[in-house]
Length: 272
Image 1: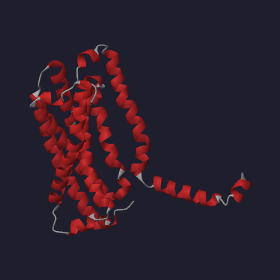
Image 2: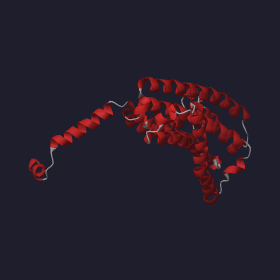
Image 3: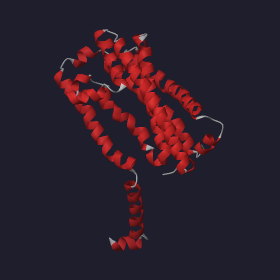
Image 4: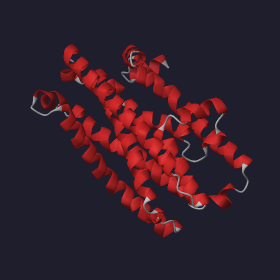
């Protein structure tokens, strides 16, 4: 093996140096370390709860109607709403332009509103074809939900913006080393939001945490509408109240992280 390395001009010490570099980078970045544990744990929790629900309710698919397809579409609204917000923000980070924006007359609230509008534009580009495919291939008319769809959409988009504002603040303060939070945090919400199964599937102690999240109310309301033909307005009002608190909190955190980034000089660095 040593002869092969010597003849090929491959230096083991250079390889070891690069491995050491990447190890130091991994060890110094808590988002990267968290991500290694995050996805396996998330997969087993999410699909484990779904498996438990299906095992306990053998007639689930017969009763569900379009609830699974509806859940997929609503989840995509939540996920892509946040992603559309965060991608527009990250584009400024990648271009090293955020410092210029923050030194301009542009106010933080104006910047965030622009990101919200872009979130809606990106969301429309992805969701409208998705709903048409659901209609053509599976006969599920998402728009037949009617007026309740407005309540579902508004609550989900408000939650996505709140999370988008929060994770953007983290990236603003800690640089692109925290970029993975943008892609992973929303998936951490999935098991507790009960996208594909009711809250009753969760352990009793975990149900309290689930009801803290606005999307939980939306997905429970969606199942009540599609399976039992009952619109739960009370769930939508409760979700809206939590969303208002969540959005105000995320905005205050963003402003605090922005001020911290200005003090530490992180605003002009934007690297790892």
